[in-house]
Amino acid sequence: MANEILSEIEFTDLAQKIQNGLEKTSNVFKKLLDLWRHLPLSICRLGGKYGPDIALAVANVVLGQLLPNEPTERVKKYIDGLVSDLGNQNNE
Image 1 (cartoon, rainbow, N blue to C red):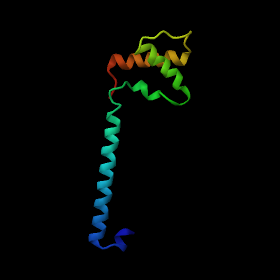
Image 2: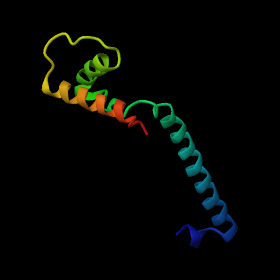
Image 3: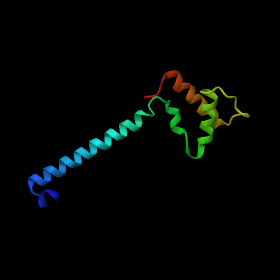
Image 4: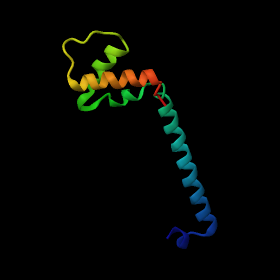
């Protein structure tokens, strides 16, 4: 539709502006993700409903803190995943 309304020069200019905007957005997104790339993939689970469970796993595995009581199955799963990620350097 824009091709029918705009002249060829205006259409080309609009298309170039859209492409530039997408490239800038992509670069900003990449920079944001680069801040987190060094972390294991398990850290992606941090936050939300089960954030405290993954935080316990991170405190146990990364910081070496003892768990306050017997971990739940979910915490055990997060610990296993984090140990696996760290062992495999699965962070990219």
